[in-house]
Length: 624
Image (cartoon, rainbow, N blue to C red; front, side, top):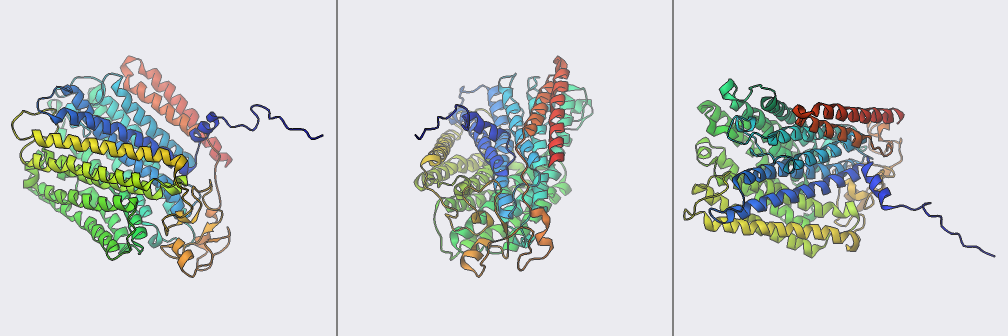
């Protein structure tokens, strides 16, 4: 007589904590990219709440909704969060997921280093955010101008800016390690036939951005270390009453801070450069110009930092030199804009949500670029540098530019990442509410700046012409908040009820559309062979009969170097040691923060934990 097997509890079953552990220990670039994206979206919403609270305060004159001190904290954390915890990691998240797929690689060059970068980013964000409940958040602005930030001004002498200085170093380590990983991956892990002039433009922008991070972040690292020493160990790098120089802080910070603008905006340039040709059904116009203009932006971007300092008294020759370089850098940016327009011109446009956001990006970024050219002129900048005109300028560049392009990228690549489409109707509601809200919020700031409203103030008097437009801006800010809520709802609902996407729902042409949605752990079963800039279109519409080649086999039309053995599958097992190392540095950071309250023991314990993580990673690497 047949018998029925009775399942044994716990055998062959997967509990929810198994799934959590899989994600905690993952070294798969795709999962790490998704972790980056969702964590950055969380911080983006956090920074957005900071902005809404400030807009409520400024909606009416002489409001007492926020105290001056709390406004300073929200103002500082809004800028810090959006720059370091939202826009940058959103770019890194998409890059983590897509760059190996676009290159035809199986993973990033250093998977464990990739995991370490994520955990350092997460712990750096938690460290900064914990300042709200551990004595007060940073309160000297995201730019932390000395001598205020160095305890040489009128701010309360708390450890608020120590949180900022140490937290930025944790985030800086994460960014530099991640950028080195990107550089090595792009240089060494391209598929056979993928020469530099065949790389997707998104990969180009990620490569240039990674070099910018490697060369720019050491400047702010040195500056924050010096700031921490001024605040805690009696040095006087930035304190003029003790012989220091506050301008040194501005030079060190902006030598990082202006390349940072391009660190945030170059990957979005790459995103729209992938969206336009797919949704216009024609190749990108001027591929070489777009690719090499990214390199030009990277070089020239290091020569313009002092246009943030026209009002500090550098002198006419310095002002003229930095004005010239600030105008020159508009040239490679303008090249991209005209090439994007030429790509769309006379194309067979498929107006889906990704294209809406990409076109919205183009419109809004041009507005920000035009106001940037205006601010490159020292006499004009001198009049407007501390006004709301500048707030409007950089929000049109970084919100209207970077954020709109990033949302376009999410709608474009979401089917590849999760295998389901986002709802098109909700996507259009998201776009139009965000587009209208964006312009309602930031367009009036140009006018307010021109009539004299200063930035960085927590209130203003009634009857001087600021009331009406500040209320309009606040309404626009809430429209943006509603639009983000629609996106999050769309993302959650689509996971269960979204239309099944298929492998190539947009008829894309780059390599990520030549594998399954979502891709397998190893990305490709066989080595992709690249014969042009549009390898997937070659297979579907060209004469190519084979998309892939057997491993260790020379593919037709490729050289021996292009079929080198480094394209073999190499997927290290999951590891919790990157988390251990990052957590150890997280503990040591708190020890450093409270170094005069027994924090030395925290430093010792934290470094001991970190040493365990380093030893574990080294041991695992030796076994691979």
